[in-house]
Image (cartoon, rainbow, N blue to C red; front, side, top):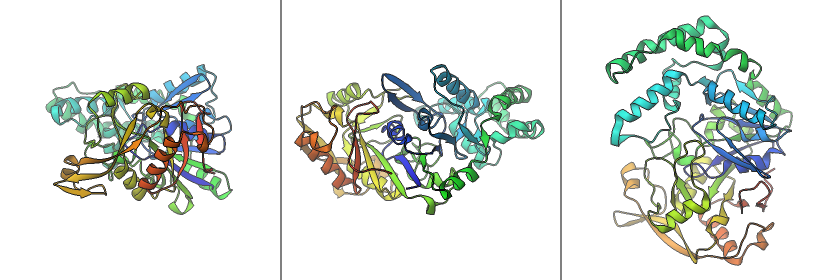
Length: 427
């Protein structure tokens, strides 16, 4: 299996970092294909916990080459800080490669992100304020700045001037903010050229050659399917495509070269930020899930909204991504419930609906229809095989697999790298 995609099948925060890290020792390249430092992955190796934001999780696997693809937006100050933090902890970061076509997040992007979100008031999206959306907007408007522009001062200055001609008007006249000086931005960006120069490469050519030579390439998405700008719960979404198709546009590797698409599912559901969430729990069960699961955003530090597993969303993720497998995470968090509700369908205007409604209005009014499955009280964190799980835990996994439309090939029973049950090999 030379090329596979690993992505979130819910609203993000499903545990993609752990899944990528688990596979990292068996692959040659791990590639981030979209998003920016608004995505956070937590990886636990032994007694060490790593919080990654821009860097692919494969950077923690010694034999793996981590790649930041052209579909990612890069805040250079955040990237260098993250690299420095790992270097201080003894992690080798020298093999990192960055696409010269990846777009940069500049100081004016973060400024605009924060002031525009405040301006929206009650209508705010719940953005992280890190400049992701404005950077992608500039990319689409063809006024973006790419990594390769750091190495040509003339082009860089022209692009910054063109961008600020418009943005300073918006800042001053709409938001009553001070204009941003071109020289200040150019000087800051030029300061990143030398530290980043050794990492920049033609990653599209590199990855295609690697696949053609039989090497294993893992494409790692940030966020999750329901945050996809086209296929998510718009407008409460991210500004890129975390779905499987984004792996192709975000790296320059064609779809015929991808053999497997793995969706990461949490054994319940969480969401950060605003937007509809049919199974959200605003009671003691929701707080219990949040506490036991440690549900706090890796990047934002915000408490995650928690709810029961939603099979409608899982089926949708299977469909729009063409999922071949699921990796089910955090099954251990559900230990201790006598009965565990699972959303099997929605009620909308008095009708039962088993597929995700395309209408935003309908989804906002969807009410979950639950089936309760028997729980378990036994500790499952030491289980190494599926048969070692309690019978009710096995039945829960089997029910989720049947409802979701793709086989569950691995189960996370704890946060550690080795606390995983593999049912079928991904490679």
